[in-house]
Image (cartoon, rainbow, N blue to C red; front, side):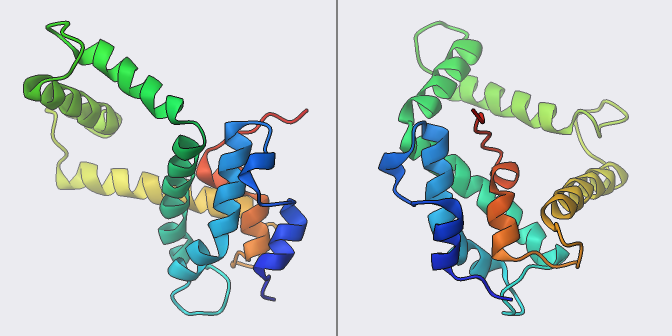
Length: 176
């Protein structure tokens, strides 16, 4: 069963970002407004639902859209992260990152991303370590797919995605 954007709008409330009470809510509403196009882009077979493989393409795109919407709703979030990074990696304390400091930050972030899979501690991933890291990523996405696939039929509809959008995008809104 295909769900129209109108049905999603009715299920999720108004799509106006101005009506949101927090930047996170505004970001989720913005992603909800773009949901049909995000699903369509990942729907390789054109059946209006996403299987596991299609969902693996959709989830990172939805997370990226959520981050962009959150930064658009509250630019201070990106500014705070940038200021935190600058403070952490600005060795010469001049208030900005020069090329060497940016390179050091990029390397630190790269190492942080691979630390759980760099079993020999050499700072590089062997083919075996890369494979394990890939499997772990697929496992996380499969787990997310299982959370979203509420009717457990192996396909997720736009309605199921809309219901699980906070989990997919990583944008958590406190419920009152």
